[in-house]
Length: 312
Ligand SMILES: [Mg+2]
Image (cartoon, rainbow, N blue to C red; front, side, top):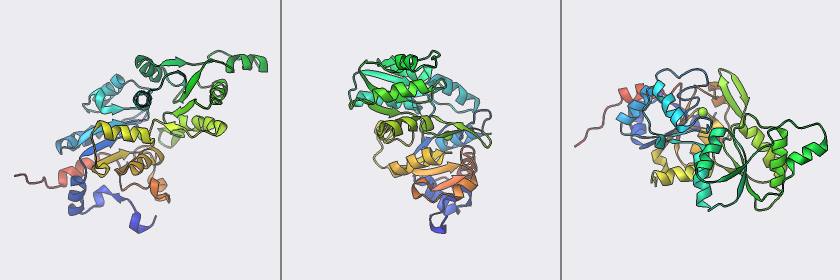
């Protein structure tokens, strides 16, 4: 990394730099997994960082690529980390998709590969879904064909996290995408999902890329780093200057890229999917955060040591 564009660790800033940093944003968009907790463990004291940010007058929105949990489950999970939020403060790809489909006045059938929670959000919003095949397929092309060829007028293929994804589902989706009016919509883009220290599993982005490649279609991305999500968040919060947003996250290709594309400031935390050596190896400026921290908890120290601004 060249010295000039190296991200700065927030606790190595001078007191003047800290002050300027703290005054440079009004909104915090924060990722959840890898920042507040991981699959099996919590980031200790993460909640303190968010309460300190709120005390400093920052407005919090949580932006996750994880639609597998319901908003209510996430709110309860946050309570364990001592973070009080309302469902309205949390955004995930299923909600963004509802917002997007309404914005384009989408009508028609949707073929979907996603979790039950994701599908429930769409059904509740009144969209018509098709899914499957969910049964075992005999090893003959005749049986395969019976399960993947379908003449129904599907106008959107949606792929997010589907633990029961099969090759037959991908084949069926690809066949719908032969229709020129059928949209390809992806949710979470993560190609690998960190599940523990140094352990990743294949993420939904890798499966989505099979469809992108096979169909030759650019996907419309509902998760980070997708543009529709960023536009919606700016609109919902009535934000006119994106530089006044600080995006906090643990993933370079999701959180940092998302923030950079939208013109937000970015803070990478090293408690999830990116290590310090991975950060140091970044050469693409779009993946380079403005700041980094060992953990979101570093913000507690930064806020405690900064001089409160004199009012009146
Ligand atoms: Mg994350």
